[in-house]
Image (spheres, rainbow, N blue to C red):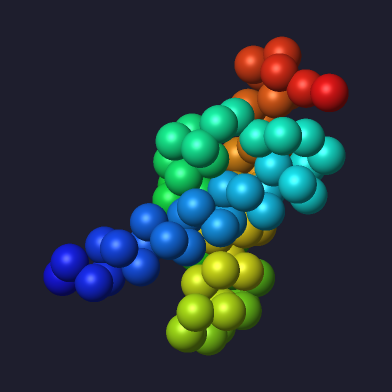
Length: 84
């Protein structure tokens, strides 16, 4: 249980950071990037399922989390007014 939680946080951190870079910006800070990455993992998993993309493992989880986090960062910047 503890290893999976650390794994999710690690994937969330990477996905949030990647989302900040992909979205042409600096991100929202370390904690917010991790939170966006973790929520993005759920959103990305849902998006991948709806698109019929199935997989498992680290790379699949990272890809799904990054896609979801990019969507969240884009929406947050659109409504939050934080952008470059």
